[in-house]
Image 1 (tube, rainbow, N blue to C red):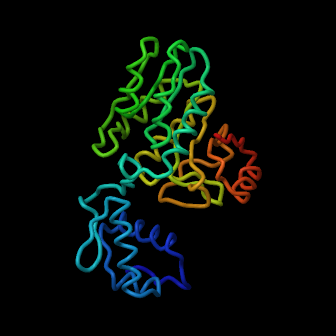
Image 2: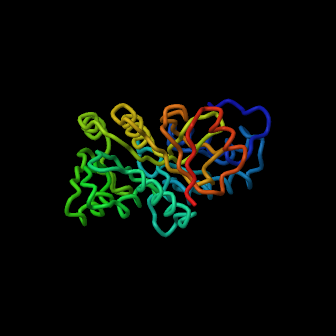
Length: 265
């Protein structure tokens, strides 16, 4: 039995709590949630409808369930090209990130909706070695004659076209990286970076163990938001690359953690 939540919560906080409950119990009920959050059943239904659009959550008559027992929560929009928001800003951020890559560097590019665009802006003459766990990144790198590409093994995740799990996490440790580019679903005001998918979050944490420099690419809408899984803190990253829509509060947050801010204009 879940404990009753004391005091009101905003939509974002409610939805994160609901996702946590789904991950633990694999189902939730509208009436139980309404009582827990001291909210109307109509409000909870709207929350569940939103989650069903954004995550791999299936709505039922009286609540919501995970589509498959034991499956992790997945943020669907991260991998659906038709639903990607802030596309222009993300392309600019990726191009700025690509400009940081130097001759013969060993680089990692993750599967984020912003980061995977870096592969389209590589310079063939730099003769880089690219390590990736995403099929689309690897395919983009194969267009270059002088870029070496390493695809990590592991369990393939259909929706993200990524390898994951213990094998991928162990393999990345075999490749000392000069520079890594990773995305984040959210940058919290607590100074932590979040991902909406637990296998990806665990993998991102491994990247920090082998990369000399780690740049996190996020559009400005991701600041002061949260998701299910924290994988690093701001003081662990070499820099944050974002767009010029970043607000003053987020800039102050980065200063607090001595995080290098790079704005793609």
